Image (tube, rainbow, N blue to C red):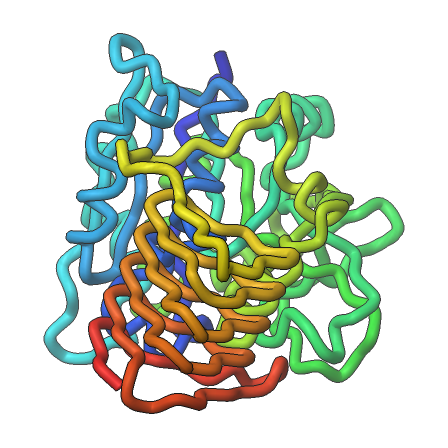
Length: 371
């Protein structure tokens, strides 16, 4: 059993997936047709034998509540642990005041009540597979005050924009934390995943509030780089950061590649999600499907290529869907052509026969729309 309280944190204001974020937090985004984004950090925690988990939300909690439920489908031992969904009071003055520090402070008693000695914080907008117990052991052995998980990349000019980056010394000590503005090819991308003692975590929350009402947890860490021993822990697997619609689309497209998918979905490291009892997908004799991920409960009569299709979708005869992400319970009508499109859930596309975007700028069809 991992001696840590797991915290799934919400992202900062730099993360905004236009359109999809209007209806739910990133934690509740549908991903690869059958998962939600929150499934990945929770599964990492439960696979690491973290049995006490808190999920923090900034707004619109309903969809996360309905998906997570009691947390039983995440293989949590409810007798010794549990899962809680928490959020702070939204500031009426300004959205800027709704920081993670404010939410942590509003729920400080639930943090202090935990009998765990350490805290592991993971974001809801990043996808990766990582054993947190291994990171915790490395943190304890290093004697560091805080460990920050990062990935060294050589495509920072075109990817991971507005993600935090770490400036490290030769001993992997963190000298500063700054935003990736796309100015350099090689960067150490912070995965916004932190390991520290619960005692220090509580102290940093109070210190952040004394320093600035607008501070996020990353800000107080950056402020303390010279005072605390903050060290980087390098991760080498697959990482996707969902910071805008293009990165959400690209991550779904990435995982159509079997080799990439096997780096995230490992047999010994399952990603749990809420399941339902819908029927298997039906394919008619007219259906043509190539290189796709198609969830259960669908009816496929048309042509689909290089796409992700969510649960309960209907692709009618003569429809063509290419290079697209179709969220659950969507109907694509006869003769409709979609290419490089993200279609939100419960949409019907029938009257407009041609919707196209680009890989770098996919078109978006909003939730529940009729076009």
